[in-house]
Image (cartoon, rainbow over all chains, first blue to last red; front, side, top):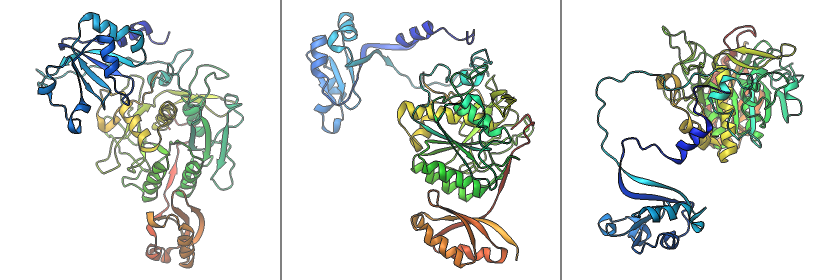
Length: 416
Length: 79
């Protein structure tokens, strides 16, 4: 059992097949969605329903449908959208939904709704937590449940994920058998993690489906791991090491770079702004920690460098109630200074240096690899990279009852 | 002469010619440590009094001092 509050799979399945109309008014007509927009759906529509008056947007110049001319038609096809509005009786509707020749070609039917200008709500809105609360269980961390990695069929397979941090503990048994490219950019140190932070972040982004002990904590469990050591065993790093790590990851075709590091600077640092943009156009999305300089409620802090560069995604931390973490930095007013998304960043369980093996800690550093892992799953699911991948993460994130200045577009979230 | 660490960002037009930019930076007295062609940055150090002149090199978009990042110690609860 994952969460007692959540609807069962059966309930969710039912909701999907029977959209909840609530009090919405319908026209009596139906919308038919075709699988593709290339062919002409008119013959299929006519043979399944027997309708004779079928208009298509392709009958009009520039596809500008004149509704006064289509009013008499039984069906109007919007060819570029692959959607038709049809006037059908229940029997014809049933044929559209079940006829053998429609199977595969028609992907959905739905009643046509009447839309109204939105009116102002009466009275003040109350702030109610609409989201369920999450907790770790025997199988999964709360974070994996909250970003939907636990139920997603995607694993990050075929996607290269770079984590630029303090390296990886190569002796950790949870990473045995994985494809790992490790490289140190810290003078005088190997890629072996001597701090723990890097091993924790790599664990969250790319840890295994079945750890050697305990619950699963890794999002993209089949991603190819690029462990770049840019911070020393003492946890410090310089621009030159970090830029060298970015250069390396982009050169290797990594779709995602996770950077749980930052400096408390209010202005974007030009080298990262350029590097972020150049990475993005080459298909690499850089995701960075917003920073832990807040002390809420008194001091909301600010997004530091490099996360405040316009082409680097900034990740805030939320807790298992989906509330902003007290340390998580707020958006800066300038361009690039905004928080873009949020991730699980309080009480995050992941891998740590042996022999401790596992550790539970807080930080926007922990939220960032959740976002990176989710980005890898989206990259696998859609083939998108760069700015398209960024847009997908933002679009698909689950909106939270928090300020957008604190959590951006909300909790990163992947499809089933 | 005090050496300072610098990161030189190359402008879009000169990223492909970054090795030429790096050579010109060396001529101005910069000790070049890394030429990062993919991101378009040259890192290294330069005597403090020569730092300003690096901005005049053709193809240079920015000359930045080096910032450091520092993680909390491993036993800190917030990372």
